[in-house]
Image (cartoon, rainbow, N blue to C red):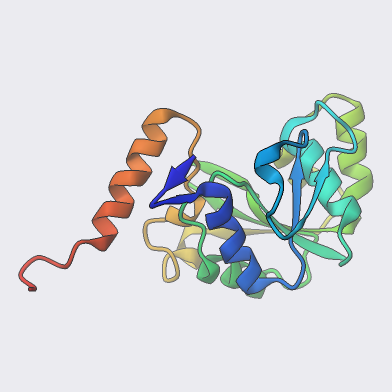
Length: 185
């Protein structure tokens, strides 16, 4: 899917590339649309586990002890929100935003300490990544809306495009961000 002439995946990658020295793309399966990205592309180590399987794969293959995981369908992913979360949860195993709409597991930081728990959940067919926050022994830092309001007042960095209506909404939001303020020339 494209927004403003760029795929949602490339929009996401451009934000991540500016923040992190390594970017790993995890996909359920390889496809031609993933070639030429300039990043290592891997497929799920435990297939059929949806987001949880992708997170497990990314964390397993990461060269660093902690990762930031983002979905590729977040058109307004923004560095300030990511940096704020990193700052507020420097030492936690999981750093995740808790918005009125719920926990945001694919705009979050995870340490490798999560790996055995993710594997156990995958093998048990428990695919809800948010459940990882209730695992005893993991330090979890939930970031509130108030903590994020200064960096992302509308929480657009957390918006996902899951339906044609979501895409249309994103297009309208993007067009509205380009308009000059009323009264200016």
